[in-house]
Image 1 (tube, rainbow, N blue to C red):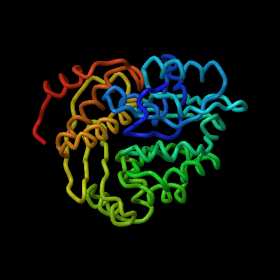
Image 2: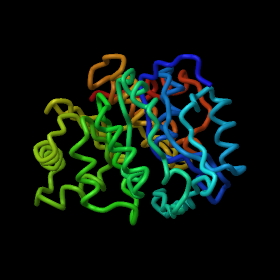
Image 3: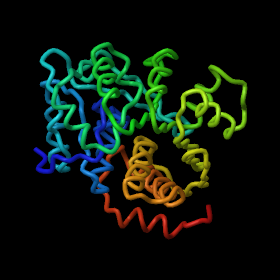
Amino acid sequence: MSDNKNHSVVCFGEVLWDILPTGAEPGGAPMNVAYHLNKLNKNPALITKIGIDDEGKKLMDIFSAYDVCTDFFQLDYKYQTGKVFANPNEDNEVIYDIVKPVAWDFISWENEFTELLADASFFVYGSLAARSKESKNTLFKLLDIAKNKVLDINLRAPHYNRKIVEELLKKADFLKMNIAELELITGWFSQYSAIDDRINSIRDKFNINNMVVTMGGNGAMLCMNGDITRHSGFKVTVEDTVGSGDAFLAGILSKLLDNAGSSEALEFASGLGAFIATKKGACPDYDLTEVDQLISNNRIKI
């Protein structure tokens, strides 16, 4: 139980177990973002649903041990806790087999969400939780009352379609995507090939003035009110890339909450994402001084 009821960020969606070749790790993009925001002292809350099984109990225990708020974990008495079978390919990209249906497909509306979102600076959501009717309906009720809506697009075939993605984009104030997702989405409605043109086309079509695009080893771009900032990234030895994008998003949001400038926010987010890629799993234990050290040791001009 969280003592501090004022949660600066509320995340919504899937919690699950990533079944990796090396073993099972807690995961799910909203959970990962919440984990790293908690490490950054931003007191996040997570709205999700777990089964009444050992896997669900373990997730509750893990979050409690991390001192992350579990007040908004719903219990499902019919469906199991989420699982994803994740297998890295030869390019260190992870291929996901996401089990369906599971508990987080059935997140139900609770009236206390209204008060929760009233105090939150950011509401983080993705496309995966919109794959099922009940969670999607709850999500759109939340989007109607949230202040700053952050869409972590997180496209996972075959769990999305163009219609739903465009509905989610129309609600967003801030968009986070990787380069493949940027190319896929802009390919639906434009012929642009340059990254800047693709970003501008999304901004114009969906009225999203703030977005960030991650490009793996090639760094990232942050667009705030039409101004684009670039960072070429940090070169690290990759253990696995699971959750590094989620850590990146947590880093960006943390710095925006601190009213940092675009360059500082992008550098820190890039450093945190790179650091997590050197570790196994999405939610490794770490100290922030380790991240600061990586950034200071490899600082480059933006």
